[in-house]
Length: 290
Image (cartoon, rainbow, N blue to C red; front, side, top):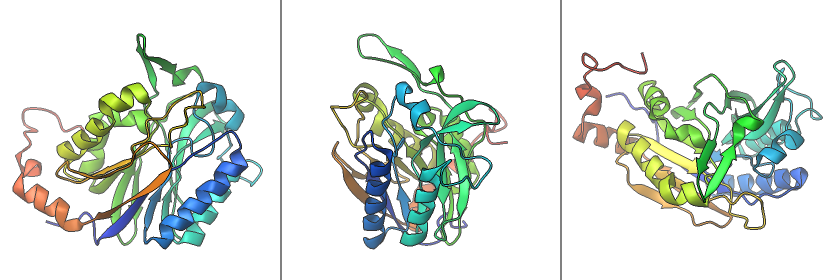
C-alpha cells in the first residue's frame, strides 16, 4: 500500500475572529499564521470569509478580483497578503475563503486560495454548493441571491506530503465530492466553513466524522470564531477527525488555533483493518470518481 501521506505533518486550524475592517482582518490573520508556523505547523488553514463578515449583504462590498492571476494589490489585497503570509511562514496556507468578483462572468463567488511555502498560488477553489436553506423558526439563508457556484473539484499536490482536497462549508454535505477526492489519493479533506448555531449543533461534527469514516482519511473543518454582535453567528468548533472517524481535536466557539499531528500510519492501519477500498462493488453500483 503506497503512502497517501508521505511523512507526518502538523496541521493548524485558525479559528479567527473577524470584523468589518478588512485591513484589520488581514493583519490579524497574518499574526495567527505566524503563530501557527512558529508552533511547528506546516499546513495552516484560515476560515470561510476570513477577511470579511459572512452574509449576503457583505459579499459584493468585500469582493476582490482574482482573475487574471496574479491580480494587482489594488484588485486583491487579500491575495497578496495570503501570498506573503505563506512565504514568510514557509507553510502551505489554505486561505479560508473570500468573496470574489469575476469581471469575465460578471458574477460573485465564494473562493478559496491555496498558497505554497514560496508564496506561489497552488490552486483556487470556488464553492460548488451554495448555502440555500430554510429551517422554519430557525434560519433562512440564500447564498445564491448573490453568489454563483464553481464547477471544479479542487485537489492540490503539496510536495513532500501528498494530496489534499479543498472545498468550502456546504460542500461537505455532498459525500460524492469527498469520495472523488479520496479516490484521487488525498490524505486530507479541508473545509473552511461557517456553519451557524442551528446547523452547527446538528451536523458540524457529524459531517466531519461521516466524511472521514466513509473515506478513511483525515478531515478538517475550520470555522470563524463566534461573534454574537455580528448578523451571522458562526458555530466555531473547528475540528480535525482521523481516518477512523475519531475526533483528534475540537475547539470551542472562541478565537483559538487548534493543532493536530497527522500520521501516515493512521491511514494505512485503518484501511488495512477495514478494507473498504478492496470491497466496493462497482459491478453493482457506479464509481462516482470514474
